[in-house]
Image (cartoon, rainbow, N blue to C red):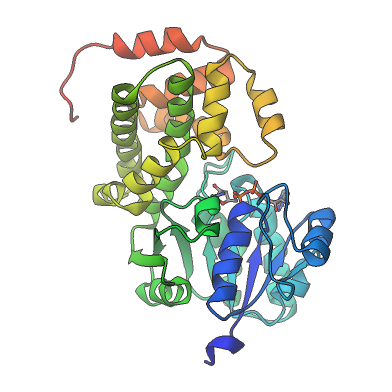
Amino acid sequence: MNKKAEKVSVLGAGSWGSMVAMLLYENGYNVSMWSIDPKQVKELNTKHTNEQYMKGYKYPKDLMTYNKMNDSVKGSDDIFVIVPAQYTRSTAKELNKCLKKDNLKPNIIDASKGIEKGTYDTMYQVLEQEIDPDHRKSLSILSGPTQAESVAIKDMTLVTVSSKSQKAAEHFQKMLMAPFFRVYTNNDVVGTEFGGALKNIIAIGAGALASLGYKDNATAALMTRGLAEIERLGKAFGANPLTFTGLSGLGDLIVTAGSKNSRNWRAGYQLGQGKKPKDIVANMGQVVEGAATVKAAHDLAKKKHIDMPITNAIYDVWYGNANIKDEIKKLMERPARPEFY
Ligand SMILES: NC(=O)c1ccc[n+]([C@@H]2O[C@H](COP(=O)([O-])OP(=O)(O)OC[C@H]3O[C@@H](n4cnc5c(N)ncnc54)[C@H](O)[C@@H]3O)[C@@H](O)[C@H]2O)c1
């Protein structure tokens, strides 16, 4: 297929959706975006800005954004779903209608990082349930250490595409590779999704520690023991432990829990300052995926009898009004034990 002729629709025009759209646009694809918000669509199509989500960024004039999903999806060879995790199901339902209407069978990839509230489904599972198999090729997941703001300035960025189909993973790998953007593939969808979703919980913890005056040793301890519990939970759902040492595990944990630019880190910082979770989310103006994910991880760990003390402590602070300093003390006073269990 002529590269320029391949049509791509990116569902979601927030920070990450719009940066992935830009990457594809610059790689020569015929890209359009969809946003549920008519005001955002108007701003993107008239001023070519996206101030709430990518402050100061200018988009090309011929990158169109549509408010009617079908206008973006029509004739598309590839669909990127990049909306906040809790809206992935409603977006996928609408997408399925569009695909049926025009009898399309595109490649579909999801780049959201979260677990659905209530069902505890990952994004892959949500798409698998909502998109009719007759109207899709294989599904894939895009993950790894990526901050939209760094991609905007073309910081060296490495990601992974995970799919049960190597052919599909390689298809998206080829589409996304760029001089500053290197793409790997793997076939561990569960591990890739658990790493990408659960590191946001640890990022909330890292922000909280920083606001309480803890230093580098504490951050390293949190990230390492946080990764150990992410791996324990992932393994219980069939993930390959090696995946957690990769881009979607350790890599994403470092960028999210180690950077003030991460909104989950900033949410945690405010939590450490004593702000209420509902006020933190309201003031952020952008999705804080860790807030929903910590509940999902807490509940899944309980169901599977997996020891996740850090996740549970953050859950108790976020949802149960527990005192953050007491929770840290309790974590430090847990019975002595071997490092690996
Ligand atoms: N921001 C990043 O750097 C980054 C990097 C990698 C992955 N992600 C993941 O990508 C996903 C999207 O994150 P983001 O940073 O682009 O979010 P964002 O907060 O920047 O943007 C959210 C977008 O979702 C739209 N939206 C709001 N309500 C909606 C609804 N009901 N249905 C559909 N769309 C709705 C908004 O209009 C907006 O365009 C998240 O799961 C996030 O974890 C983000």
